[in-house]
Amino acid sequence: MNFGARFRAALDARGPFCVGIDPHAALLHDWGLTDDVAGLERFALSVVDAVAPLCSVVKPQSAFYERFGSRGVAVLEQVIEASRAAGALVLLDVKRGDIGSTSQAYADAYLDPASPLAADAITVSPYLGFGSLSPFVDAARRHDAGLFVLALTSNKEGPEVQHASVAPDQSVGERMLEHLRALNDDATPLGSFGAVVGATIDDRIDERTVSFGFNGPILAPGFGAQGGTAADIRRIFGAAAGNVTASSSREVLRAGPGAVAMRDAVRRANDALVGLG
Image 1 (cartoon, rainbow, N blue to C red):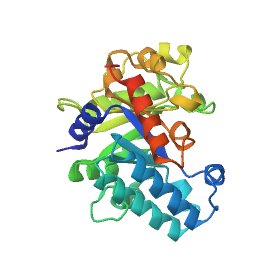
Image 2 (image 1 turned 90 degrees about the vertical axis):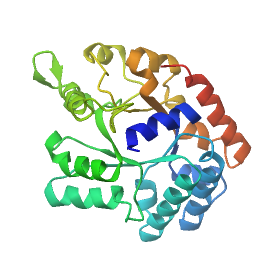
Image 3 (image 1 turned 120 degrees about the vertical axis):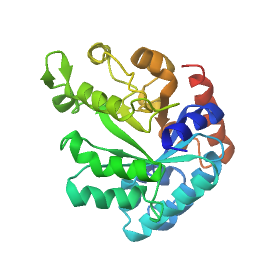
């Protein structure tokens, strides 16, 4: 089963909410943990134990593990393995993007099942040109994995690139969606090549985004504590809202370290999002 089909099945079975497992130093402190590998491991695996059996997608941000060096990456490997064992899809947030053999090496690291870091899908950046992602695309097809391509993010710096015009009435971000539409053509029930589009993009940006009908998954970060709401998901994505996994980290992690409180936060988020499509 390719990633698009697994994604569709996971959202149908467990709801559209995605939990970001992002061990910020401040969160470790709030949990009463030390900002070291021991604290990282206890934090991350406690979150996995609480939420991975419940939610459709978990999204560890690689940087928060990499900052501890090889021992932190070893914790990330545990997070990936334990999350998948609990039935959650793992979307590894690495935002990689390079060319040639370097892209191939990244693809092998994160998408090849032989790698201890292999995930169900990863985030990638197309801003060396969409064609630079070809090694990732080929690896995703070969291993039934998925990609989420940065398209229209809600950080304040994004418009400098993503809203630049590449053709009359078409922005760079819209061109990325056009490429994804071609990759997902004729896939059923959903293609494996998704987009990252912020849950907090404003009305002006939304007016430029003429269609999310690229037949692929959508990751919408910024839901919950960062201000994105279910109404925003409907406003931005329209008929494609059912293909969205809306993600939040702080909304759930601040409820810890108690597992029950974290699970309740996941259920509340899913309840708010169910029925969007």
